[in-house]
Image (tube, rainbow, N blue to C red; front, top):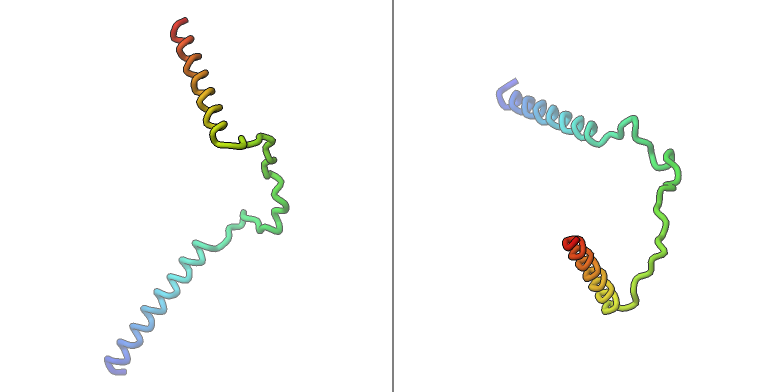
Length: 84
């Protein structure tokens, strides 16, 4: 073997080793663990929250007024607490 063939062999071994190292790294990162269950094994997700019965206000102005009223009531309660 001459120098050119030796260099080609070294190059092939180095790139092959790096490729194998990369493949093993990806397998260890993305391989499913033994504790993970597949979606079919888990079954139906029954922990979905129920819909609320609260209704949104029909217009924005009324919503702002209600929020402002609640804010004013909270401020008056704080002031009464400071006075007593």
